[in-house]
Length: 149
Image (cartoon, rainbow, N blue to C red):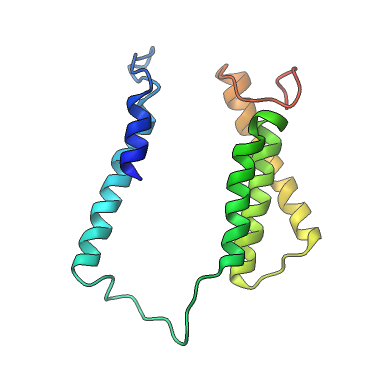
């Protein structure tokens, strides 16, 4: 994963802005962090894994249904970002991901809770959009041409 992110970062222009940091800085930071985590995990596996952690009791298996909700949120965010705008696509991703995580914990996944999660997603993503789009003048996909949503 680190190699893929580094490959993508290499394709971004490295011209530094007024702060001395170019647009490829953060992707390189992420690539290095992923590489460090990958090396650390590889060393753990080579040494026998995380032997200090308690072993799960019974038959532990992957929760594919919960993972599917989280994956659906990520994929729909990527697919809908330019169609419905940043705020709506990120709010939808938040609602789907929290539904999957709640389901994995065995908590309520009612439609009322999902609507509340969607509203929370809007409350989180709208200020982020405004900060970047209006405050920093970075063009993020918008639903309306007014750039306020």
